[in-house]
Length: 101
Image (tube, rainbow, N blue to C red; front, side, top):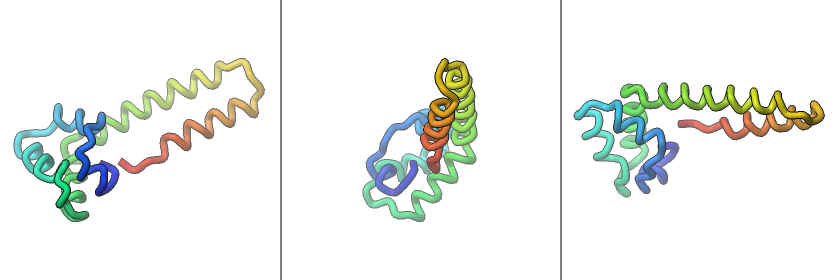
């Protein structure tokens, strides 16, 4: 959950899917008491984000992102194009990965 709106909307992202598979019963109960609740405030959302970290879901997501990042960059390096274009593709990948979880 990146922000209050995403949490209140209850978006079932890959991060939430990972959380479901890793969290214990108490973590799930606490998280889903906030997730999708339109009355959740920033304090509630901060606590939910802490649960994403403590469950291991955030770390697992970051590992997957790193793997995809490495694969994308290998593919870019293998393109038969001018170096400037490869640099621009690398910059695009970097830009896409700039997001707080």
